[in-house]
Amino acid sequence: MNDYEKITQRIIIVDDDCSIRDSIAKYLNLKGWGVTIAGSAIDFYKNIDQKRFSIAIINPSLPDQNGFVLVRYLYSNTKVRIIILCEALSTESKIDGYRCGADHVLGKPLNYQELGAIVSNLMRRVEASNTCDGRNNFSVLSESKWKLIPDEWFLVTPSGKTLRLTAKEYAFISCLASQPKSIVSRTCLMQNLGYMQNECGHRSLESLVYRLRKKISPTLDTPIKTANGSGYTFTSVLELDG
Image: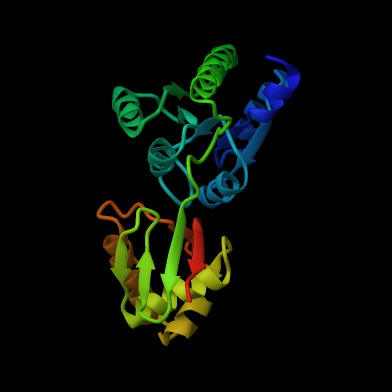
């Protein structure tokens, strides 16, 4: 593999511990790999929509979302190879990681030589896989486009499933659609939804988001992401139809 191939087969590291994250990035950069870092789930989703990656190294303990949700997303929607990096490695955490779709589950403190060997091995598998199917796609298999249909208040999923929204649900999704891949503050959302700026209003907003996520997915695994309690964002492509 030449230097260009190593740089284009990128790695994303998702960990809120900047010292560990930066240390891993420095080590992998010295080995010749292209590296992107993310300190939260929101940063991860923004990067995964904009760039292509071969490998993701994910710490499950993130500030805004459980890292295992990210692992399940990658496993279900991409060809990205996954390494989970746990704070405290246990049999339970290893089983959880492999069930979610991880290729390897490692613990801290990290053995960098072991990590380097694992990354090299996974990159060879990625290269072999892309050679076999004739593709050079290291991230999302197909762009996950959602559609919002204003006339009938429908939300259409990438699989073609059509969901009828209530007036409040439609207003909420419209707010997120107006600021694609950006965080919309709770204050702005509550104002647009007609909720009072008090504890009751906050509870109403949270209840609305929970019901909408449940409507989209029984597991609540949706592109509607919470940003540190300050607001919400829609991380997939959302198009207005009509």
